[in-house]
Figure: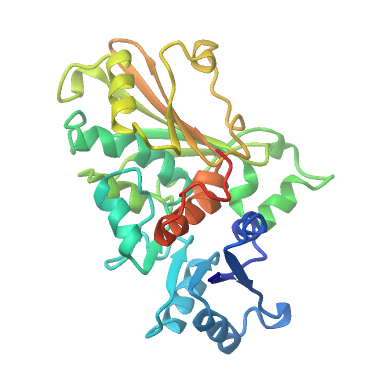
Length: 315
């Protein structure tokens, strides 16, 4: 029997990408809301309650409203907003982190999909803390570069405008007050004792991102070299089809550049370890609309349904 799925917010970037992926599937029946009533609470309530699974691709307050509309109903909610990522009773939708995370997703009815920057950061830092390599009180700093698609319709329109300002042709650092909305989950999910320093950059390309964390080798809990950390990540993520760890002779890293858009359109994530015996850089490269949003949301649904978790995705 086909599962009935409703996408609340299907007109946004993430919602459109999820809808597109479902067109390849024969096990999903998509429920469509009247476009003129897409913001009407009663109509949304009717669609949510008619579904087996509802994806929330909405601003935070609207996502909270949708969860309230589903109260008392036997419906799985997969929320791509920031609203519930650190809330009690919500499974964090990053199954590769641990068996406990995967089980919580499989058995849960409330799933919070990680933020795009948080996905990259947590993929790097969580294993280091879990493996006893990075002290919880380490003063972590991170920078990242991303395409403009994750910034919403207004920003996409600005970048794609013929008469845009010249500043949009260059990378632009933002979140200058160190209050980026992903910081809360970065700290909580990894278990860090202090909020990391985080400097994201939005650049003039559509999708894809790189998130990097810089480490002083002599401040780690044990001696590590880039080669040994590469082996550590490869072992930690072995048999995880969505996460690939670069080989020691990886051509991309050897070339001296990690491009933000290299994995655009792919639903996995790739980890690199570079640097030297004194200073090590760990980096994650992926599509902010793939493993950083819609791809991760569908992966979580696949786990809940018990099918191949890559079904309908590009790996």
